[in-house]
Length: 221
Image (cartoon, rainbow, N blue to C red):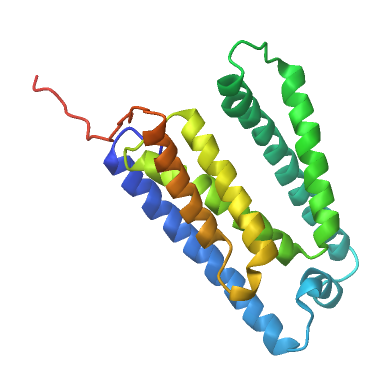
């Protein structure tokens, strides 16, 4: 959305992405229904193991294991590369403009992020819990400033980073002290991020940098 040239391109991207995602979600839902009908007492943490051991044979089982490992490794290294680049360009450069940021800094960020991800994976042990906890941090941190930017409200990096930190802290605090309420952690996290970002914007006296997508206007020949 942020790199689209006009509204029509955004609409087309949303339409194609929605259709493809619907097909993927329906396929996964149908697979889950088949597994539930085959074994209602199956442990949710053993789904992949059950599919490999039950519905594959010698040779195909090895290919499936290799394929799953290749998918996991390719996703992990691409995410590590993206996170290290984002950390350098969106955190270190705005906060430390006078410092000399080099490729070594990106490599160090990649090592730190990879170590943190490994510790988180070993701590959770269940892939579903791991996905839920990462989503509960992603939505309050990223969604609020992204939606505001798409709507034309673009503040300074200081206000945005402060809102992100407050949103992440709210998610952690809500999970530690108010999880018994049954309210998902991303809801108070998103609200805290929104309130803090807008409050810091006006308290710091930042200027709103508007950038609204417009249709391309062709001049008459």
